[in-house]
Image 1 (cartoon, helix red, strand yellow):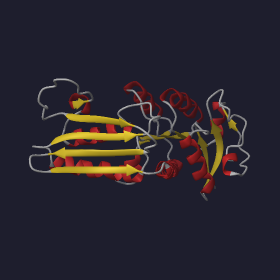
Image 2 (cartoon, rainbow, N blue to C red):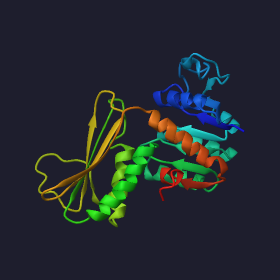
Image 3 (cartoon, one colour):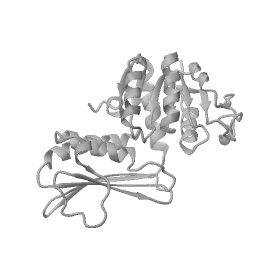
Image 4 (cartoon, one colour):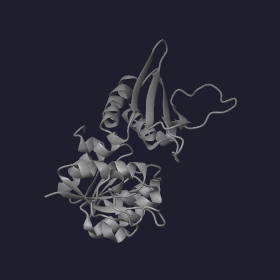
Length: 266
C-alpha cells in the first residue's frame, strides 16, 4: 500500500520539489497539497507544473490533512505549528524541515510527539547529517587549543539567520564538548571586540544570489586548521531525505526523531 503524503507550501520551490519526488516514487502517493490563503495556485492541480494531472488540487483547507498518513512541511514556524495541531488531532505523522523555530515552538513539537510520530530536523540532507556525526568526532578530538567558527551562506531570499543547519552544527559541537550552545555562541562582531574568548563558538552569515546552502565548521589551532564542509547544489537532496524520513515514520505511532535516527547514525 502506498504511503499517503501531504505537502505544505505546494507552490513554493521546496514544495514543488517534494511533489515531484512523491510523483516519481513507487511507494508514495500525493494525498494533500496545501498552500497559503490567497495563493494564486489554489485550485490548480498539484502536478500541473510537471505537465500532468494528479487529481489533487492545491488547497488552503488544513482539515484535509486528515486524508494523509504523513505531512512534509518546510514552510514558516507559524504555518507549521498550525499544521502540527491538525496532524496531532487526526493522528497524522509529520516531517518538519522548517527553520527559525523558537524554544517555545520546539516545546510544542516535543509535546505533539507524545501522540504522533515526528521527524524534526533543521536539515534533511543525508550528507549534512553525516557531517553532524563527523563534527562530533572532530569536536571531541579538538576540544583544547582550537577556536571554532561556523560560516554559512544561502540565497538572498532566506529570511532567518544563522541557518537552522548552522545552529545545529553549533549545538552538535558544543554538546560533544559538554557545553550548551546558548552559553558560548557569538553571533555578532563589530567595532573593538577585544580578543577572541577561547571558549566561544562564532557564527558568520552570508546571503546572496541563488546559493542553496554552504556550511563550513572551522577548527582553527596554532599552526593548523581543520575544516568540515558541506555544499548543496540542489534542493533535491532535501526532498530525497524528506521522503526517507516519511517512510521511517510509516510504522511509528508516536515519538520525536531526527535524521540521525532515520539514517541509523545514533
